[in-house]
Amino acid sequence: MSHLAWNTKEATVGQLAERSGVAPSALRFYEREGLITSRRTSGNQRRYSRDTLRRVAFIRTSQRLGIPLATIREVLGLLPDDRTPTREDWARISECWREDLDGRIRTLQRLRDNLTECIGCGCLSLDRCALSNPADELAAHGPGPRRLIED
Image 1 (tube, rainbow, N blue to C red):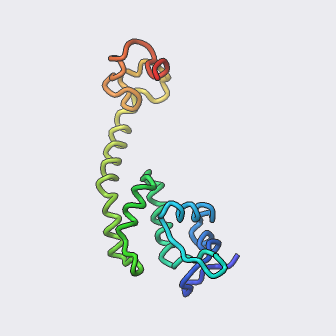
Image 2: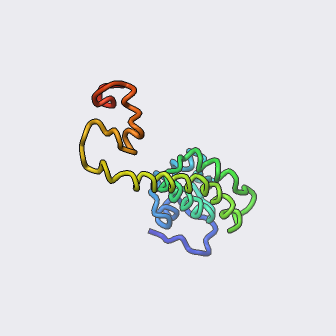
Image 3: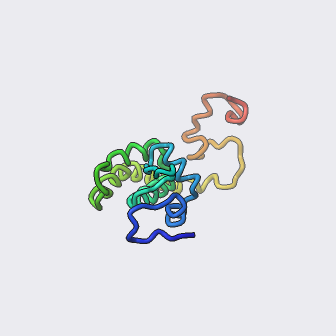
């Protein structure tokens, strides 16, 4: 495999895949979804600009945080098209996740703190389970394992 040199202005799909750790098929998918762009050579081969590596890293990190691709696409749309994004550009769009992530952290902390009474119990009533039946909401639907007997 050829390595993407730091002084290279463009990379092939294989070079970008090698450097980013993302499969070429995923890079082509990201392109179809409008998350990254390439130019085509006269032989119809993809060439990615160097800043695409950072975009791919941003996409992968955002996905690991559970952020949907449509939202990632929206935020990437805030980056400039006419120049390579600066550190300030990346900091600005990263702020888009802060409120969402803070909410997720609070939710996860609540779940963590309320799980001790149902971890591994296997009961069907789950009247106090913060995950499956908070505040016994399913009791209003009748007795028994409501999630198993209702659509």
